Image (cartoon, rainbow, N blue to C red; front, side, top):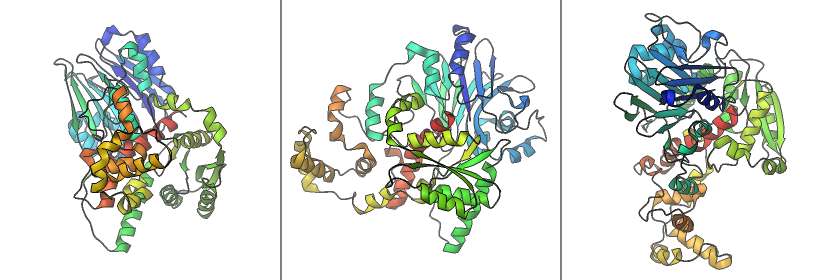
Length: 493
C-alpha cells in the first residue's frame, strides 16, 4: 500500500543516493513521495493514496513539536475508534488512518500502541527527543519490512531491491539462506538472501538507540490455541458476525475497491459478506486454459448468485514461460511458489478498474482448508523402525537413481523419518534431509545444522494433529509464502 525507505547513515549517503533508492519503490507508491532528513537520519516514503487523498495525508508525517517523524505502509482498520480516543488531547491535521500512529505513539508509547492496532502495516518512527528509531510490523506479517544493521548504522525498506540499491556492495549473499530455500521454498524470516539484511518478523517491533548503538527486537503478540466448545448454530453465527465485521472495516476507502474471487470458500465468503453491505461490487478471477486447473466457471456461478460484476481473464502456459524472470523482479530472492503468476495476473486485471482489492488469504490456515492436513493425518505419520535402520545406508546412495531402485530409495527414506516436523516439511515439497546432501557439501553447511529450525518453535505436539498443522502454517507458510506472494504481486500494480 506504500513504500518505505530510511537510514541512519546521515551525510555519509547523499540525498541523491537516498532518493534513487526510494524511487526503486515507486511501484508501491505511485501517487506521492516525500522525505525528511536531519544530520543523522533520512526517512522517505512513496505513497499509494487510499484514505484522505489530499496533501494532508502526505508522508512522512511530523508532529507539532517536530519530535516524532512517521512513515507507514498499510492500513489501520480501527483508526476511527483510536482517533476518537486521541482527539481529546491531540490535534489531527488529516483524515488519514496513518495519523493515528503518530499521535498514538506520543500518547501510549510503542508497546501499548501496537497492542491497540487492528490492521496490516509496517511503519517506521523516529523519536527525535529520545534518539530512537522504531520499526514495527503487523501481527501476521501482511506487510513486509527489511532492515540492514552493521553494528553502527541501520537502514530499512519495504522491499529488498531498495536496500540493494542503497547499499550496493555491502550486500553479501548468505549460502545458508540459499540452502534454507530448498527446504521451505522461500527464505524464512528473519533471514534474507543477504547475510547482513534481515526481515523484521511478524508481530515484532525493533528499537535502535542511536547514541548507544543498541538494537533490540521485541515480539508483542502471538496467537494462542484455546479449545472452545459451543453449539454448531452458535459457532456459525459467531463466524458470520466476525467475517462481516472484518469486511466492513476493510472496505473503508476513498477509492474504488473490488474483490479477488478464486471460487474457493474463503474468497467467496468475503464477497458474500460484502454483498450484504454494499451494492455494485466488482470481482476479478484468473482462469486457466487447462480445464483440470480452471475454476473460473465456479467463480462465475458464485458471482452470478451474489449479483456481482465479474471479470475473468485466462492464463496460459505460454505466458508463464515467457515471464519466468518476473519471479526475480518481484521477490528479489529465491521464491518457489509459482502461483505468484496467476496472482500477478489477477492484480494486473483488477488494477485496470479499481485501486483496492480484498482477498481470502488466510482462510485455509484459520479453518483447516488444506487437503494436506488430512493427508498428513492419514498417511504421513507412518514410521518404520526397519526403514530407519537402513536409512544411513540409503543416504549414501546417489539421489539421482531412477527406476525401481530410485523409487525404493525414496519411499523407504520417507518411511524412515521419525521426526514429525521433517515429515511435514517433506509433504510441503521440501523433501527430507538426504535429498539435500549434495547442497550441504556445495554450501559447506555444518553437519549439525538443523534443516527444520524455522518450523520447530511452532510445532506443538500437545495439540490435535490438524490444529498442530494449522498453528504451524499460520506462523510460517502463511506469512512467508502466501502473504509475501500477494504483497509483491499486488504492489507491482
